[in-house]
Length: 509
Image (cartoon, rainbow, N blue to C red; front, side, top):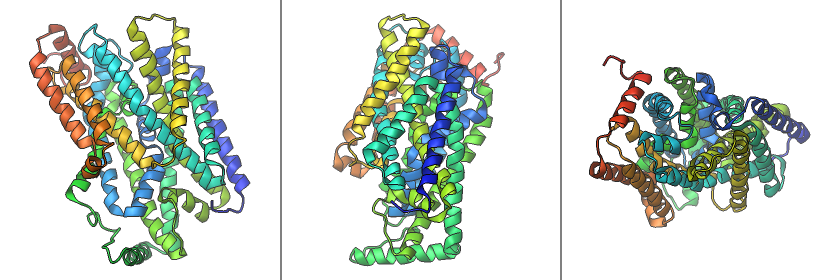
């Protein structure tokens, strides 16, 4: 923990931030009347809200802690992840958002990804819906757990609090406003949290740069730190200002391949489904990608400038993922530092809340209701909130193990979703002949490949598991669909209607 002039000021500011999030959750609670409101905010999100919500729920503690830490430890070679993600996000907004918004409305007004897939194939067989729900739960538990780990580390570094206490505090407050506010609560808090993250990732590297005396001093400091690291490692080449030194071709491909994951992230693409219409997608894309490009650049510079700053101070961070937290505390007045610390909390909590809502929908809408249950609207709401609490408890138990880094936990879950859902989302929107058996084959192939590949050191060290997972899932979908496709006029008509609603075709064409 870095001592500050007034830790109490910082703690009070963080408590006020917590109170603000809970208040927003209550506001959303007053406007939530049924499961559709709870899971999708009635499809009424404005472009700015959808864009900031998608960005904030996507980036999480990875942006504020994981990425700066990776840059601090290994240099710009880790920036390939940010580059790949930015390109992937742009492609996702461009090619998936408008069609998914249109198709989910056309296909039985689906409010979850699994229910959309079932409606897309116009089948009464619930296998695709149930298996998709199970996959979502399995990987999201790891994802939610990574956020709770980040929350615990935050309070340890910022206030010297016990890790378990900090983790439970973050988990508890997030669960409260998600429990009552649902998707609308998560989306509105995301807007506040996304703004805080954006400002934090602008201010910290900027002030650190000024403190060091300019970019020339930064490059000199990084070079000096690299020289010291090289000497300590028996003359090994260290150049953290390079995008390529220390990287192999497969390493660069693995990092950039993170962008593939966007097409299958339920907590991101559900924001597309919640927009007012497909016509809002271009405006949302411009806002979202602008936010992301600037924020990711700020995260990269935070890690890079941190190398020079701490080398000049003659210190070394015990945990590289704490670089943003520590710089915030040593460079700013306690009150400003408190707001920056709250930005880290914002990153963590925005993602946890969004993922809990998706997990809730998977349990209730995609699994429970698939077995023929017909509870009342109020009962469905109660079940949805109970599912949020259940998933949060399981994720908190996993977060008790702090051996894995935030980036490792996020990377595994990201690959799982990207491989299991990415190929079938793209194919369902652009290939008429995708079949339900093909979608099932792809989901299972992608999830199993990532599950095995990501847990075998030799394989995961060779290439990031999303690459084989995505490719094999796509191949499985194509092969099985070719073997099982039969023309269905109803599916064809719905596909054509989607093109019209998405603006990809005029009604007369």
